[in-house]
Length: 341
Ligand code: CP3
Image 1 (spheres, rainbow, N blue to C red):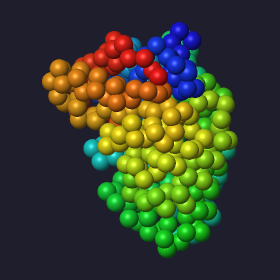
Image 2 (cartoon, rainbow, N blue to C red):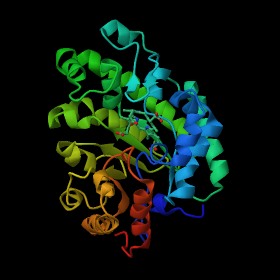
Image 3 (cartoon, helix red, strand yellow):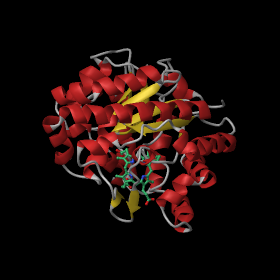
Image 4 (cartoon, rainbow, N blue to C red):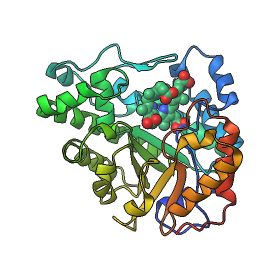
């Protein structure tokens, strides 16, 4: 591997600088992505065609110069593999024609063994071939609670109140659903590792709608099982908006904990100095003048000093961001003389 910075940093080793990648770097912002996407019937065709998925996975490595590629796919392939297919509606986002409405719907769900998602492993293998050792490939999956949110709500939501309702009104059924999602996710991540991902990230995008005690009951045991069972590569947990969960996540079996831009690296680092932290520039900084982007990126880097760091935004890059600002963010990190640790 010519550039294994992210693997070394994720293992907790001291590196010459913080490695950098950007959540949602594949797709969204690059004209080259839009060109590939325009020739297709939809998002799913791109996800399910390994050659094309590999092409857009490699684009940010070539164009932006990131230190890792993240495989182009979506967290919603897991509900689909379990029997709830998703649709991606232009301008609106995901939609599930069939959702979980009663306990018998959970009984009817299939526990995925991973073989349903062969196109993802094929895309990983094709990506590795095209990268030819330039940078590592990051795998990913949704956290069980975030996947439960989509399976119950059938689409995005500000409050996910229907999903939260299940935690209180039908806790046993909610646990049964989380068990099935967790088993499916473990099988899926193991096959991603077998196909060649060097690290993986679990996205708990809707963690922020919970409380500390709900997180401890309905998230931590499942997240912990994933990290313990898929343990042959370094792993990252990113629980957006979940300040209340940081003590638990910093004591978990994940090597790296992702921070959003509302979180204070110093305060979180103090909970467990041996963990690697990832993040956390506010993605809206990238709408500012170049000088501001450089200044805020440098401030972000120094806020992580004193321990392991993987540079990233505090959430996915927004779709209307100018890709040149993303490149400026990346170049700033690559040329800064910060030492990781
Ligand atoms: O990071 C990457 O670049 C790799 C690819 C990736 C996608 N989705 C591609 C995608 C990853 C890692 C994801 C994860 C994902 N998907 C999450 C967790 C990350 C986060 O942002 O919190 C979530 C919640 C989803 C569900 C999802 N998929 C939503 C809500 C949407 C619609 C809005 C949006 O984000 O654009 C998607 C669609 C989606 N997933 C697109 C892409 C490139 C846009 C599809 C298009 O080209 O039309």
